[in-house]
Figure (cartoon, rainbow, N blue to C red):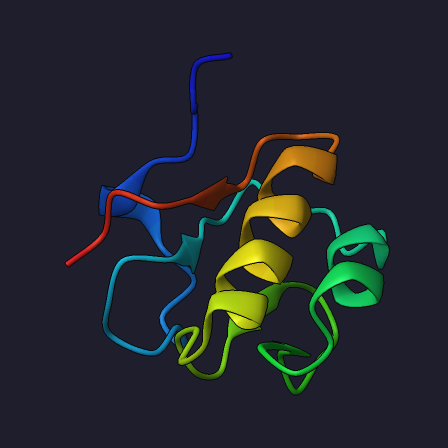
Length: 80
């Protein structure tokens, strides 16, 4: 499965690091259910973003699951 998220079009609130959400996000809530400890809505609730990067193996798994479940492939793992 190819990852189509665009690291040049990140939601600006993303915490710096590997995982991010880009502006193709349609805030469907699916990823939030998988990784509520890592993700938050923007203030206007138009997008979701990584408010922090995974810090444990469990959180890494949650981030991957969130990435896989995203219907618009807005989550990426090739960020800096």
